[in-house]
Image (cartoon, rainbow, N blue to C red; front, side):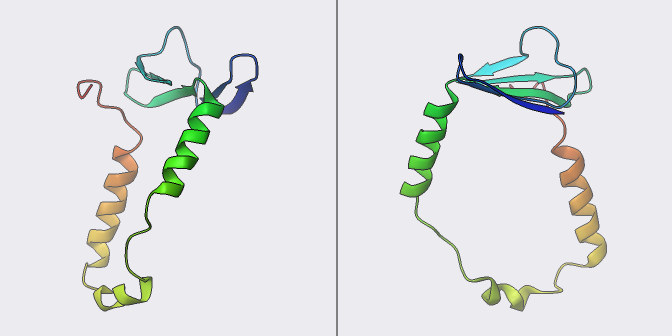
Length: 103
């Protein structure tokens, strides 16, 4: 795995495994590469500093919502431990793949 920043292009790139050729998908400043199994191999962001500044601006403009964690303790133990393990496994498995038909 490698993370690099090209100053001249203002582009940050994360390569998880070898990346070949053109990206499989380009959405705005984002480029994505994935392998035959649908696992993400690489990601790059063009105009990184501009994108980062916009993200920080949007983040600071958004309001913080939610409740204090201690108020959620009443729900502790409601979901059986076995179900929680199944949910965690599904998230871990599902988050490492790209559904190429979804785009």
